[in-house]
Image (tube, rainbow over all chains, first blue to last red; front, top):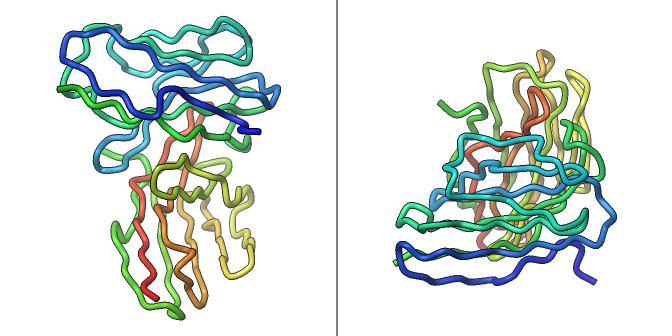
Length: 115
Length: 109
């Protein structure tokens, strides 16, 4: 069974559209994350959720909104997509609050292309 | 300014050669992690080092945490094509995990 899964794997859409990416983890972890990996492969954290509470919110445009219906799911909704949003988005989870010694388990990524 | 700088950015070597990848920062970390990412997949944790000067070995991979806990290195002995991938160091000065700039390794058979 896949530990951290994301859908869709690929997403191609027009500028200005609204889209969502779904993430589910079956590891029983308390914290989930969203990362953005740009074309240069730089991986940057966007959000993390711990027990349905947002505990990290980096300088991400408010067009991006994480939504967690329960501990096992953290979806990413993006409004008014822009060309610069094109990237690979990774969901991850960890057992605890994401401290420096926690192991983060990553999903396979969603490649978003905005035309 | 990146918190964690990795060098080299790209590395292409022949099978059987040795290599070292470096991860440097001006910040002190309580621990540092190394991940490997293969094309089309998410990063996978290789190791966590927590003590200054610590050395950990994982088969042909040797990881070292600098004495001052500001840097780390990854040494691969007798590289194999299966080692090909993107190597990322990651550290958390607080609760945020920051990833390094990455080293893309290609091992040619």
